[in-house]
Length: 616
Image 1 (tube, helix red, strand yellow):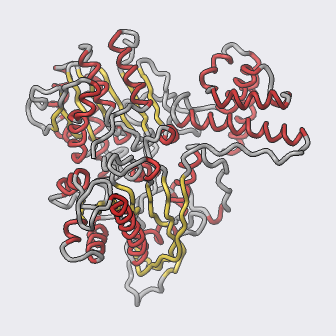
Image 2 (image 1 turned 30 degrees about the vertical axis):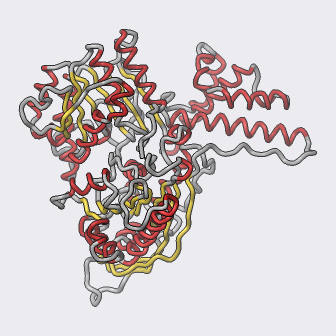
């Protein structure tokens, strides 16, 4: 099956226009580009676009692409070698995956390396950046925290490694002619600032906020809502599986201590038992039950697609759908591998199910085969494949992981949301994610759905006695000192993460009093304004901070000449029609010099400050 003719997505077109302006001198001041692209939205083409135009214009001589893991270097090479994009752009650039040897580019347009390699030989890469006008691509930049003193902010081996990466990368960044930062998330789980990005001055009680208006910086955003609207990613169906788990505390054997539990995974709120129950479930019978649901869902999907194509059983073919299993640790991954192979005929399991963990010598070969060939159809991994893996045939994910930080979960989710060019029409594809139905995952789903505009209901307040403190709640380390005993699945429910904004509230059947119709239309106007505010903050169209919905309401009032509280029915309907065709962010200049708005904004801040102070 031949791939369709390539077409650029909106963020890719935006970058193309930006580098063209840089090449012509219209945007000569821009030297740093931040591309905040939702996972699966198509970041890997951005370095090709930037390098092609900037090298052609003579602004840079080479591209250096730095990735967080060795497994991603091959994909970076493939992005430059893709024949369709070569023909579309008319470029002949090539880069090579380099180790820490002399002359890493070897006469090509540049090279791809890893953060680990730069940290191991910082002088080599700094000398390369100083010797050539360099476009430096910093991939998944959120892996780099602003470095502190060695040991001061490095409570774990992982923190120490990230700090070493940052200290090695900083002088390379400063030596580069142009920097292109890529990320699917602009926040770190530990709340620290990200290296190389500008931030606003710290404010009491608020986390780090990017300064999107910093000199020399251009920002390109591409949210999940935009990607869904452009059919760049797939809608997601979640299979949430509840269960019960029992364990022993303190590492004691069964005769020394009474068992704890059974406790429900889906307890509704985060409790002291949430982490131990999840830890136990992922290592006992519940994991097998969830794995079974994901495995047989994949089997049914592949059988259906075979039947649609009249393919006989056993014939290898692309686009049938694959299963990615994300395990909590390497021991569990090996146990899952054995379980999956036991469910398949002898010989087939060894061919169709592969393991890719850092402890496996053939992990990179398994990843490459999973990405590029019809078989294997199932890959079991821990963390090697969760971020950046470009395997569009993944249609089902078994999320058997204990990690609940939002950036991590978004990256894992994106492994299944890529559109598979071999699987037929877009409307016939969908991502299916099976996961434990614990309240931490449920919160992630709610946040994701709210930000893409398909849920307007805020989370319910939970009793303080039932909720674990925030610092403890979001830690992703495993609970210590417990011995898992048993668990089992007790129910499953499906939920569709809807890909569009909520439908406008329908008016009640006629006849109805005009006041009711007016109230309905005003509510629809308020929802439409709020939806635009959420979308624009998520996609970085406007800087975060302040009450954007208040600003947008003021803009709408200035554009239409009156507030919705005094509008007639025809005026309300005209206002809704105008909002469907226009973006309020394009009319923010209406507030420039507006003393009335400035006064109302100060009043709102004045009301908020005492409340915040009282809450301290």
